[in-house]
Each structure stands twice: as structure tokens, then as C-alpha cells.
Length: 478
Image 1: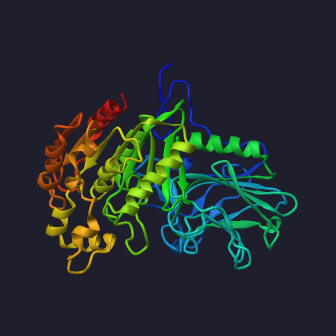
Image 2 (image 1 turned 30 degrees about the vertical axis):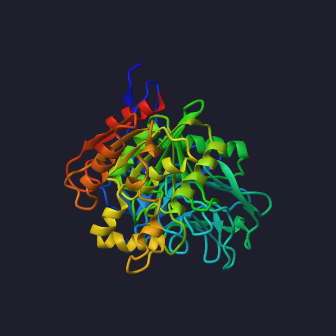
């Protein structure tokens, strides 16, 4: 059969169609994909209910209307958003003792600054991320509910089910997260608002009954398919530092593991949130690799600027142990990718030895800590904080001993594969002092240690390296 396009112009596999419509018991269906005649950035006065029940979303006052967006850069799909804390839309729903709500959402702001579904003044269903809590919280007469920590900054299928008589169960991507009994009976709710706050929504639907756990999973899977959500995100937030593990559905057996090390000023989400690195991340996931990243910091005082200190090395080793024990990964097929400051943690992992690495790719990487300390005043300040170095630098050598990759014995890197992507015109991280110096030091002892020169400045043109990077990783895992 010939492949077709869906109504948004996306290519579909042969024989497949894009469908999510009304079903038995559905009393509400709002679908951003079906909004027609709106330009990107247009205010949304009315969001039609496609269930036929007339429960349209409405914002009469033009100053408070949600915004329609024709596409999001990661996937090209439309959505509706509350772009600031004043924007919201009221949606009427029939009262009922047992109902099940689904929302396809991507929350952008934490509670108490944003709500995804707000039912009344004292009872809010809202979505994280929230420090120390997460999605699916129910605000009970001024007190927030409890839930294992986590994030929902990627597109997520959220579900709230009213059980008999008055309890609520929350599901995140089809998995039950929490059951509570609210202060006020949810049966009395006759409307809710989308917003206020920077949340993004694609679909909202409601059934007039309490779906079983199996039905919740089925509806979740339908919505995931409809929204082309093929990546699974797991936030591992009970380790010493938070970590994020992502994998693509549909691959069988133990998969290679790729560990990402982020740059200064970023977190484990760098490869997710920066467009230039997002393309690299999706290429890794589409190749079938399990991808993991830790927030490389040892204490709040140093923030995310770890600069290869022991806390960063330990965080990667701890995360690797967890991923090895809880995911289907091949422990003999592990590689790292380090960006800028993340190059330090990447190279030091070989000397540390707790992660059985095959090789590493480095992007505009800091590999010569002393050079960067001596030539970049802003970096010197961050490096002193990361290592607890005296203000005058008098104890630099003592505090950083063993944490400068170019000063490690070249034998630490023997027998492994390395690929250095670096721009000679990078004004932030010296190409010659870092990538070229490291390549020359270890080249004779490694399987490969080539330098691929990029054009532009720091982080420029990363996306053009993807074919070369994938070929390099295949050599590592061969």
C-alpha cells in the first residue's frame, strides 16, 4: 500500500490513519488538531466540543483568551497554550459521581504559578513540575496533595478518574500515581478552566463513567498514537542527583546505552530543550539507544556547574548502576557524549572505571581544565566554586588533582574510541588547547581519536555531525 498523509500533512505508514474521535460515554472532546481557520498566534475565543454535547470551552473577554499555535518546533503539531498567568478558558461539564478526564499536556510552569485544570478556588487539579512533588496534585482546602517526584515538561497523557464514592485516582501515561479523597466531592464540579499559566494542551476529553485501569491504559495508548508520542521519559529523582532516562518504543532486547553530559548552566535536559541538540537526541533514540543524563552537581552551592568534580563523576556512576539494573541495556555497549563542560565528566569516567565505556564523542569539550581556568575569568570563578578553591587560586593544584583530563596518564584512555567535534573559531572553549591537544596525547594508544572540525562558534552546526556521530557509535558498539 502507498503511504498517505494525515490532515496535518504528516506522512503515515502504509494502511494507517490518524484517528481519535468520540466513543461510548464521551461527553467532552476538545482537539487542537481539529481547530480550523486560525493563524499561528491567534487568540482562541471558543474551543468547540466535538462530542456533540455542547461543552465548548469559552473565554468571552478578549484580554484573557488562550493562544492557538500552529506547530511546536520538536514535532510540528499544533497546540493551545496559556502563555501567561492571566490567560484561561472555562469549560462546562455535566456533574457526575463517576467521571474520567484525559488531558494531553505539556506543562511549562510549576505550581503555584500555573494550573492545567482548575475546578474551583480550593480544589485544583494541576500539573507539575513542582520541586519535591510533581504532576497530579490535588489542592485540598489550601494543602497540596502528595505524589512521587517527577516532571511533565514533555508531552504527557494525564488522567484523573473519579471513583465511587468520592476518591480520585491520578494516572500519568497510563500508570496509576496516586489515589486521594478530596475535601469537596468532585461530583459537584460542573466546570473547570484550562490555565492560567504557561501550560500547553492538545486534547481534553471526559467520559461519564469511571474507566477501569485497563481502559485507562487503552485510552492512553490511543492518545499517544494520535499524538505520535513514541518516546518514553522516566525521571529518576531519588538518586543523589536527578537523572532522566529516555527510550523509544518498539525496540526489542537489550539496547546500547548512551550517557549524555551537559554543559555549564544547563541540566540533564540540555539535549531536550536546546533545538541544536534536540535533533542529535532524537537521532540517538531513533537508532534504538537508551539515553540517560544526570544533573551533574554535588551541592546547591555549585549548582549545575560541576566542572568535572568528584560529585559529577559519582553522579554518572550511580546513574549507570541504576539504569543497568532497571532497564534492558547491554552493559557491554555503553558510550558517552559530552558537551562543553560535560567533556570533563565524560573523559574522567574512563579514568574512574566504574562505567564500562566503549567510547565517547565530545562536542566543543573542555578537556584542558587548567587552560580554561587561566584564560577565562568567568570559568575560573565557576571552577573555584565547584572545587572549593581559594579566591587567590593558591590551592588550585591540590583541589583539582586528578580532574584535568589532559593531565591524566594517557593509558587511562587506551583501547577506547573517541571522536572530537570542535570549531577552530570557538571563542569560548579553545579548539587547539582542548580537542587538538587531547587527540594528540591519546591518539597512539586509542582505537581512534579523530578531530572533526566544525564551522562557527560554540555549539554551532552540531546537527550536521549526526551521520558521522551515528557511524562512530556503531563502531563503538560493534
